[in-house]
Length: 205
Image 1 (tube, rainbow, N blue to C red):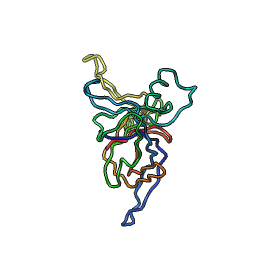
Image 2 (image 1 turned 180 degrees about the vertical axis):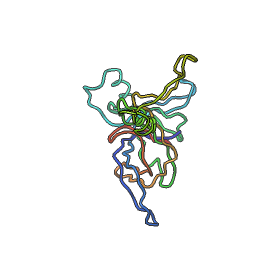
Image 3 (image 1 turned 90 degrees about the vertical axis):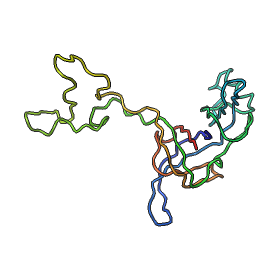
Image 4 (image 1 turned 45 degrees about the horizontal axis):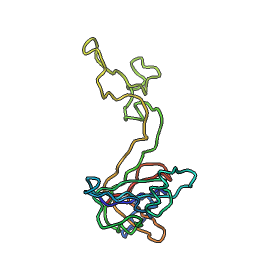
């Protein structure tokens, strides 16, 4: 599947030809350098490893320096592998945002915003234990009962409870490409994508 590594810039909105306001996200996509070519004969599968966003030499180690030197490029902060990449590319090639076209649909993956330890109302959308009736006191956001009595005498696995929220890998599918700005390496997609501003995302077509 063909794709690029990008950075989430932020959200804005555009007007379509009917005057409707469409929320959208701006992504800086590429240019990405081919840092490794996987083949069926050597690796057992076909894939391209792409690198994005230069990092300082002092932040890299000798193993990575040697890996990127083969591709004739500097050390990269983000490296992602795309299997079954369409088209023929060789080591050191640069792939730009022109890989995408306006009107087509893409899938965007990223790490969602971490929200720390949250209760069941925020984390799972619980309604709380009723209102302030039936002797309830300071329990409007409580989880309520989590199990039965002497049988089964345990809490079932998967019980929705309070805990860490966010920080998960999330993929949003079928986002329409509204605009491609090739000279600035920008792509504008309809809707929201996971992650905070300046976080890395992968865009697949």
